[in-house]
Length: 220
Length: 220
DNA sequence: TCGGACAATATTGTCAACAATATTGTCAGC
DNA sequence: GCTGACAATATTGTTGACAATATTGTCCGA
Image: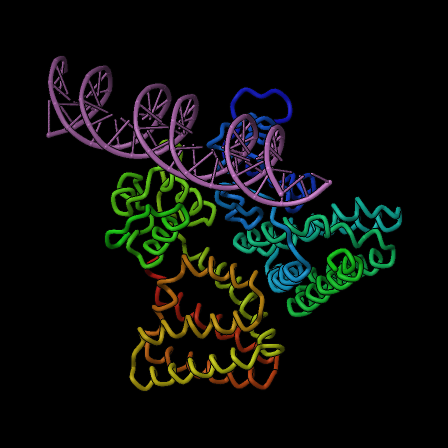
């Protein structure tokens, strides 16, 4: 795939490869995904590439038209809004469940990441903050113990991956977001399920609001 | 597929065919899905059947082992509980959004189905009640206007399809469920988003509770 | 120069043959 | 009868060739 590997990649691996490239914008919306190109770049057989593209179509990440092949599906602002609404619902529940029955290990991890986030605010490192922010949310989902929801969120986050970093380049948003985080950690550790859920909801909703202000002219 | 059709079914159609058979129990958990059998029954080519099985694996409905083929994945009580938790989150949000901005047409449809549900209670028709119950929930999701969540719920409901009918054979549960429905319709029409969401949540949670009592010995 | 017809190429869709592995059947030896 | 080795069968995995369609290039006439 990257270097020179012996065994040919499996269909799932090719799907991962393409998905990553879509996520970080290396494949842009509307771009056609020609089978031969992917074969050349991955070393996979055509069957595997086709399998991968069909899987990604199932995830809603690409669309396949007859005799025209696969292309990266673009997600408009309306769909982004719907994804955020789903996140509000799901991560809200996760916060509540985390408050109810997270393990000490999960709580410890959460605090550790929170410390690093605080440091990022001091250092004004929005990029690193973005990465740790993903980790922070992931820990809460994992701590809720619901792997079904975890899987749903993993898929929902793919199309909005870039956007999840965008807003933190605004200093003010970065500070308020981290203030949200600190309050929420307190609620989560205190076992206040209702409070944590409400806090998570407004936190994500605020994230979308600042985002839609930034991106509104882009989407028109 | 059923009768004698001319054109061969596409991969998506074969996937639908298998998914339906899994949903209504015609294919039971653990059962191996042999490619040749599906070819015989659907008239599809092997490529299409393989494509279909891979798609279903992506949906988490079957599992594929190397050189052992596809088999229907079984969902334990723990996973069912997690699915219900996700439903609580997502349908709760849908209820709130329905209350906020559902169209008059959606409201009208909801009332119509509610009337039919009431009739089912009078007639003691649990089977018909189950079908209309699906429709009732679907209308609320549709009325929320969030197609992303609608898609998530459609997938989540597949593995628990049978269970969604089970509890209504208990007369008491059927009555309380319909009482929930009527209260919720009132809240939805009144535009009480918070009330509707809370009602939907406890409605679904109650559904799982009665279910887990019925099925607990089955899952052991 | 423009546009349409036609050819050339590129790309995807389909299928069948073959390889690799698992599953089942058989039988000798005990 | 039971067990293990081996053969026979069944099933899945892979590849390549070919068909179907789309895309691009070319040329000619108005």
